Image (cartoon, rainbow, N blue to C red; front, side):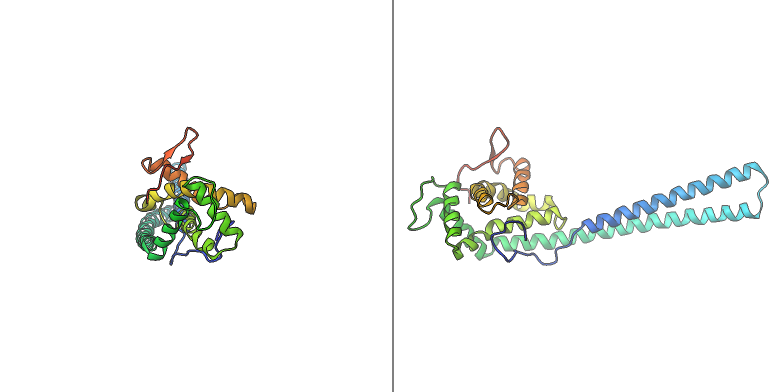
Length: 248
């Protein structure tokens, strides 16, 4: 799923489609269209020069007719390109609607709500029977995560499905599976806040596993969300996301 994942099975969303393929198609259509227009201009210029130089003959007339046909083909290509791009946009809008519905459903699932409640409980109260030295909040969650990981606990794998889910969404945005703006409007606040809560634990996991890019997509998206949703979290003078208190 991603480097340093804590859970083997990724949290997948059905029907993920990369719209980078659509962007490639769009660019190819534009390139072909441009070549056709350039070719038509060059041939037309050649015909005009030939007609100015001497009386037109059948070869020049044939060339002129070919130029007209090429110009008409260029217009047809332009119309086809517009229809193709329109269809791509419609497909993208439909795909985004499906993906956003699925994201919202998964976020609101009872199982995921239970996981988030467990994350808060560990961050606030710590592990039962374990002596915590860190204050309530992200650092106490870090202690709980490291303890559970060292114990190879099932609870550790359940706990990590929370950042795994957010990391999967971040990867989908990076690869064009869903638009950033849609995620920002729906779940944007949660990314920055939950990164502020998970940051110490994730940094500790990176150090333990020697994998510096663990949850790097989540971190990058959280920073982007923090800038575009300034009411979600606070930033320190260096632009780092600051955890303030529990918000959910």
